[in-house]
Structure formats: structure tokens, C-alpha cells
Image (tube, rainbow, N blue to C red; front, top):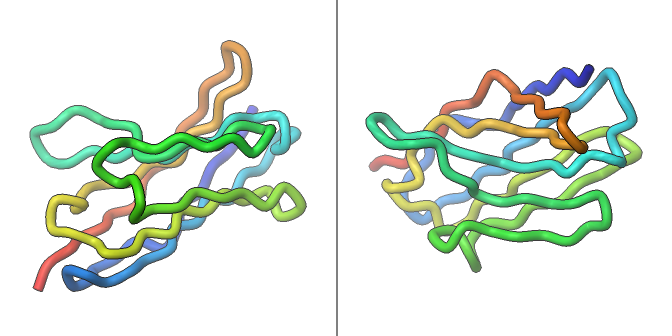
Length: 115
């Protein structure tokens, strides 16, 4: 069992930056593939970024070049650095942990990009 707690969301102006954190507890963090997903009102949940236990990363097309995912296995934490934020990045951001058939989600953190 893995518990995930996101933090770092908030209100930011277009062009600004935020860093989300996801703290994990309850299992061996380093073996999990970790991801960030987001869901805007009226839209399906979509992949933002993902990082495997090996450190290999992948990104959704809409955030490539602006967002960076990283992990600190010593702190059981995964981060999402978001730069050059746009109003269309407004959504609830969810942390995800996957290993084989195990799939865990955090409660989400709101990110609002608005002037």
C-alpha cells in the first residue's frame, strides 16, 4: 500500500512557475513508476509527465519543454517543476504511483493560472 500526498498548488499568473511535490509513504518508493496527471473541468484526466524507477522520463505534448519531472528516492518524493504556465494548464494535478498491477493516486492539488 502506498499513500501519496501532493502539495505546491496555487494561483499563479500566466508565464509564472510552480513546483509541485508528491510525498509517498508505505512502500519501497524507488521501485515505482511515478507520474503526474491533470484533470480540468469537463475534460478527461491526462498524463502530464512520468518517471520510471530507472529515471527515464516522458511528457505530454502540451507540456514538453516547459515542465520537468524529477524524483528523490532518498526523500520518497517526486516533483513537477512547471515553468511558462498558461491558462490552459489550469487543472487539478494528481500524483500517481505504479508497480506491476498496483496503482495508487493522491487526492490532487489545484493549479490555477490566471491574471
